[in-house]
Image: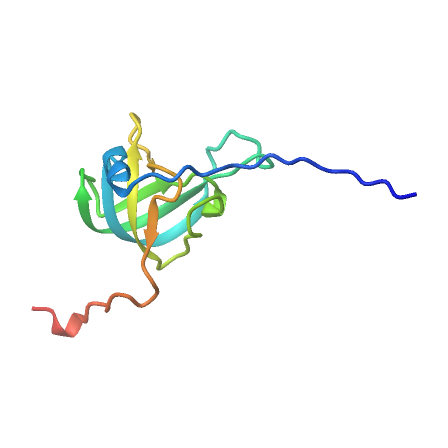
Length: 131
């Protein structure tokens, strides 16, 4: 005799949106390079449920909105950005589509709203040739 059972698991589902909608959802759109990725120590949700990353981004330029410093901190939706976005590591260059909370915290505007550039996509500025 063989007994078969089925396990039902629930999962998240990402509902795709149009690029124009992503732009309108975003308070700030910027291009920058990740300088640090760290666990959000202020997270109050139990670690086994979810966790968050705080990513320090050196801002190259802002496409929409404004930031007051050349370096900003972005709170990602899940630790390691595993859910729907690319995992971010130091020296990753990307376009960030962000919402700004009333307290000033920057967060991704929608799951998948970090567009990563391929490695070595941009040439580093040669300090000897600056004019």
